[in-house]
Length: 276
Image (tube, rainbow, N blue to C red; front, side, top):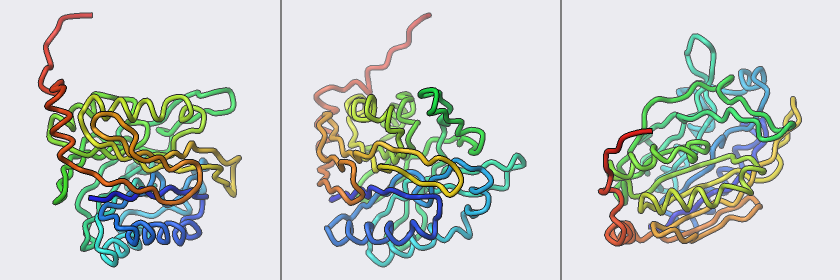
């Protein structure tokens, strides 16, 4: 199976972002990828909650989701839409950060709402409170495709190893980590955490990313790290997308999952312990 990771630099206007996304999905399919993945916040990146309420849609009416479902069917590919910001019917008005796995017939095969919210103080000027606008999910998702069992996660989930271990022990062979990773934490932690999750679980880790500077009509904008990565079950980086928008390809041999787990079968070595 050839995977194609789409790396984007989106702004805060979904309609303006969509043409480039569709063009890169097409490029990935034309490059032979049967599994194409886009980053977190594929439709838009914005820090302005009022702006988000104006531009976001509910799942059933979201134009980006509809267009990407059509693209999956047109190209005959499996498509992971890394995540979309979506309106919900929650009483508190918070949004969903939702990842979709779309089958080659254009139907949604699985959905996952990001569990862990990015509420951090990276620096005096880099403060994030994702939970103020987005409500967290509460369910881990293992999706079945003909070529692999896929554990779906999003961005900040990466720092919570227990989620990945549970997905792997449930049968995941591929772990997806679409992200809009902060440029500061990305430079320090992105690659090492992705490699750690692959090594700990014996899974392929596919991490399509946002990159560069993301302008906002309202707000200062933000920077993301880029470097979409494909990591093998033994921990080697098979592909790195660098810092420009585009597509990075990698061929996945799922036999390597069983091979890595046979060499170090740590997924079956859990022990109960006391303390602290």
